[in-house]
Image: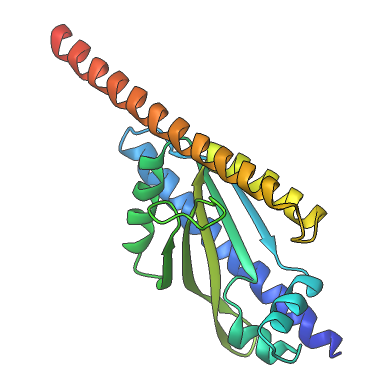
Length: 209
């Protein structure tokens, strides 16, 4: 294994994450200037470990090396944005796609079309530029945007799935999917409450004018 090449791969993807975070900070400033509340509750980031990269390449029947990691994997660098409401997800998405200094490579909407497991999230692969001492790298970063409720379900499902190494009894998968349906209904109800509160605020402001 070429240790230096792998170290550079991790370094480049770490820098790419920081570049995306800078753009998200700019979005925050935009919301502040507009007098709007920031829809982002918090942000999580990660660069895949060598073990995770190797496993994904092996699943694709590709030799484990840096060249193949760059060629076949778009999610080595990951940014997860957690929001309160579903509407926040698409608001951030719209803001991201209108930024001129990043390129949208892929969009997968697992909210409108959840996975068979019940998983929900909006996945966007963006390409950002990383300036090195001798060249510029075009680096993909997977941005996942989801609600607090979606993140809660996905985090626990991930832990359980890895505990059983994808060999959990069938009824556990069925129960997890039922929980995903409950999460979907919870998000819908919270959105309905938000809309009602927003309408109340508008009416109150009109009455006070």
